[in-house]
Amino acid sequence: MKKLYFLFALALVPSIAHAHCPLCTAGAGVLAMLAISLGVPALIISTLLGGFALAMGLWLAKLPKKEYVRHQYYLISGLVYLSTVLPLWPVLKEYKTLYAPYIGFDKYANKIPVDVYIVGVILGAIALIVAPYISSWVSTLAKRQLIPFQGVIITMILLVVVPLIIDALFLI
Image 1 (cartoon, rainbow, N blue to C red):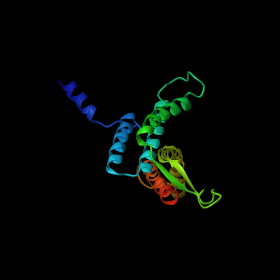
Image 2 (tube, one colour; image 1 turned 180 degrees about the horizontal axis):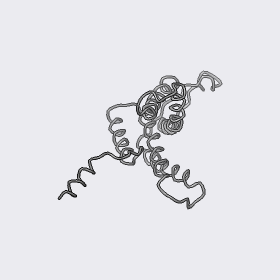
Image 3 (cartoon, helix red, strand yellow; image 1 turned 90 degrees about the vertical axis):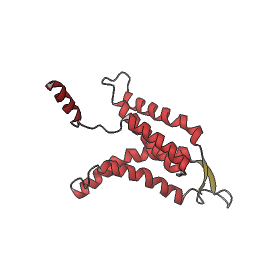
Image 4 (cartoon, one colour; image 1 turned 45 degrees about the horizontal axis):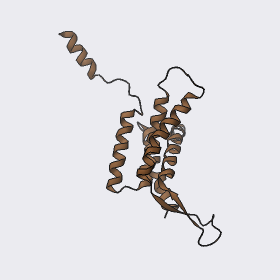
């Protein structure tokens, strides 16, 4: 009986947490679909989906202990990213015009149609890749980590602020 209590108490003791679990990523995808139905801009949702898809790909690419194929880590990451992003493309497709007067040759050629979903998933992947470098740069400037979970907070800020800036400056 004492062993049973010990095992139960041991189960309550927290262990080391590993970031980017598939359950969290799937939950974020479900919340993204709910956010779309509530009217959150598609660029923000697709940016979050792109970031979470790449996070899941990077997490799953670390699972195999042995490298069976050359560049297996990048292949698995890319395949998971594409297999998450591409099936949602027909559902979340939305077009806006990119206002780019510096590209056009006359007053009618300065607006280019852009698929907001594709722009968002690419921005999300870039934000997820850049965030650890920004976090380490901030830690280097401050000579310590400023706040707990600084990397996660910087990643989430990038995933929300970057599409807002792109939407405000370039998309009509």
